[in-house]
Amino acid sequence: MVSRKSLRRAFLVPALLAVFVFVGAAAQRVRADDAVAVVQEHLYAGTLKAGEAALAGIVAKNGSDANAKFGLGLIRFSRAVERLAQSLHRYGLRAPQGINMPFVRMPVPENATPDVLTYEGFRAVLQDFATDLQSADAVLAEIGEAPVKLPIDLSRVRIDMAGNGAVGDDERLMSLFGSMEPGAAANPGDFLAVLDRGDVFWLRGYCHLILASTEWFLAHDFKDLFEEEFGLFFPRAGIRDSFTRDEDRERTGYTGFDIQIADAISIVHLIHWPVAEADRMLRARDHLLQMIAMSRLSWKAILTRSDSDRHWIPGPGQTGVLRGFDVTGERVVAWLAVLDDAEAALEGRKLVPHWRFSKGINLKRVFTEPKTFDLVLWLAGPGVRPFLETGEVISSQSWDQITRAFNGDFLTYAFWFN
Image 1 (spheres, one colour):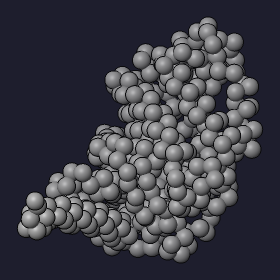
Image 2 (cartoon, one colour):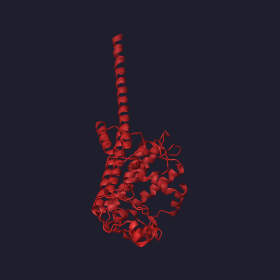
Image 3 (cartoon, one colour):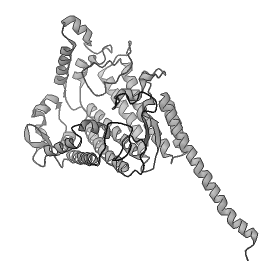
């Protein structure tokens, strides 16, 4: 016969276990909530360096805290942008209107007494940016398939562009990229996005896209362009023959538009870049392939969501934070087809068309057997001759189908979708 004492013991053990499980789960939730609060606090205050240290401490204590890892990756990404902005501010970047050039279009605060900038110094700025992005991607990669949920008001994220510790309203992260929906981020809460696992892969994809760009630039010797034209972007940084448009107008009497045309012609003419570090071209290709892989994983996660909770990238029928964008099943299918063609081109299984030739460009060989890059010769045809082959060329019909799916607005969606 079982005694009352034995029964009490029998019930006491599972009861205590239940208490321990409940307390442990509650503590886990508190830790997760703490990580989210830390991310929000430092992103909104623009104290990214302190936020990185705080979140790194949380991750060190609890390596299974996926929200903390996501927050750390997000802050490291933001800090990479911040450090790039600070470097450009240090050298007095003043990007002229009408000329779009990667990495030198950031609206950083004016610096009346910039440091002297050399070609080697600018390459170092790009390399530092790449190193910071690799650090962000590394911690994001640790999340794997773990679920995450990170509510972030993107309109409140700030970065210290001048590096002076004072972060104002004009130093919001979104001001660097421009809102895809004008006026949407005017008030706090307007851009509140609930980031999840799909956004982890999305952010990793963007890291790889930017890394591919930096590796491609650094693979080439663009010193002539730097010395002749970068004075347009850094007019007080001691670059040879630096000048401003105001000085040109006083001297020539021409309109600013005429000067913009002259600048553009000069820049295009100087994009004749020998290969300086061929290994970087291999890394650029690897990053592009990783970007494609991340985009596929992102959409896999997006399409299997069971909620509709203010998503940054919504799936069909889901609620997103961007108004005016319609993510349909047809557009998702079209985007995945773009990824397939891009991957096939990078692997040399399909050829990229050129308007002048019936043969196609083997894009894989562009990266594995790099030649001097001359923009004009590439556009005109002679520059691509070493890479022309006979084979399956990506058809113009494929592009027509894609543009129809996006109502002619493919590039905007591509920038968003990654």
